[in-house]
Length: 489
Image (cartoon, rainbow, N blue to C red; front, side, top):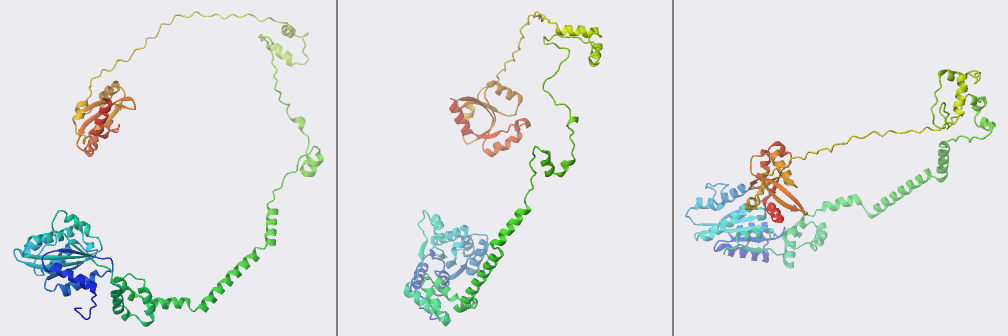
């Protein structure tokens, strides 16, 4: 034990001694890994105070809100407080500019090194490599970090090189060391009425210095607050009984308010108020109707004034059964309307009666069929056949790189449709057509130009005429074009 005022355990002393040996001769990058509460911060400060006094020291305590420039400035100011440097320049370049050809013996300890950025971690590794390449430089870097937090990146940086980072682990304290640590640094500062509770907690805690030191933070006020609220067991029992009585009283009051008799009477009154009156059934006798409704007593029977019933049969005048047409003059109609008129007084009426009674044989009618003139056959003009003026461009398309792209303008089923499309939508540029098969159906694909990237193809859409842009041309991979051409072959 180097300092009687500091408790230094055997396991911690062994780790510090190993660090001292690794940093005394040569240049190394050492990673000391441990869980939260393993004592990394204390070990870092203790190592610089006792085991590395003869070296030019620098201690960096990392915080999440620090920038790379701030961390570089903190390191350089501790190493060279009177020298100028650049915070945005790598550590190796700053040291070479300051030291030039002079020797150095530097040591750097970084606590919470898992908060370092990848850029600064790479600079530290390059600084260690540069120190190993120069015999007059002795630069040792000790990283205190969480377990396996910086090791993967350092392995990638050192892959294929002879120089490797050195890894050390902080283990749990032995049972004897944990009890010694607990007695000297915890129980000496615990109040007597808290000793039992703290000892019970120590039996369950993990054997790390940070976990053991946290036991001293248990406060007596927590127990006092709980006792002031809960009180003695007798008071608690009285409170529970009072609550039960209040609950029982409330339940009894609700049951009295909703007794069965009151509920039944309330329901009956509601039914009486909501009964819907019904009309009395009608009967055959007028007396029953009058008794049901007094307003029927003064009613009168006016059925005689109603119009005659409507009949389904119709009466016709002037048409006989043989469907023979009879012409009736106006004098005859007037005579029919006059009830005193008879066939004796009006000769026309007599003649009408004889005509109606007389049976008339239906006349034979003949329909003259007009002679049809011969119709000349209509000559249907055939549309002129579309002349095909294009040819397929299989070889040209296959010659392009499969990583390039083209714009597909249309997919048609006949050569005539392709020719009409080309004639109706002229564009400035190379239009190439190729046939393909899709589900045993032949298609003709119209493409436009060739582009190195898909973005270039999409940007070229705006250069096409408006009527072509309305057809929604889309960028198509040339590899897909090659597959479709091979499918058609």
